[in-house]
Image 1 (tube, helix red, strand yellow):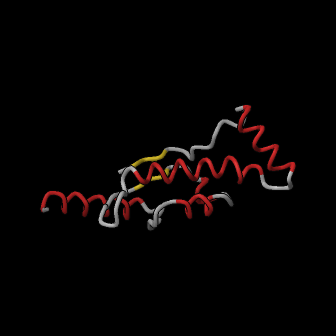
Image 2: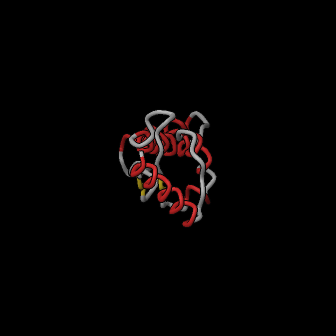
Amino acid sequence: MVVMDRIPFPRPNDPLVQARTEAVQANRGNGFMAVSAYHAAIRMAQGAGRLIRSVTDRGVVAVLDSRLATQSYGGYIMRSMPPLWATQKREVVLGALTRLSQSIRNG
């Protein structure tokens, strides 16, 4: 199981992040999406990749930051992740963890 308690956006007051964001905006782009959301998407994909390394790997990637489901950039970030099924239901996650635990014991 990999748990991500928040979306890993870069610090907005970081001078390099500010400069990159301003450069994108100067060219009429979306600085937040091109810099901050991109950074967060890469970090989240890397985090999920620590668990899911091949098509036969199983596990749970839990993202506890509700912004993934409520903000417009959530879909962009989700598309950067490995193909995962999503749920917000606690009992579904607990069921998956129970099945994984049983398969490890029986395997």
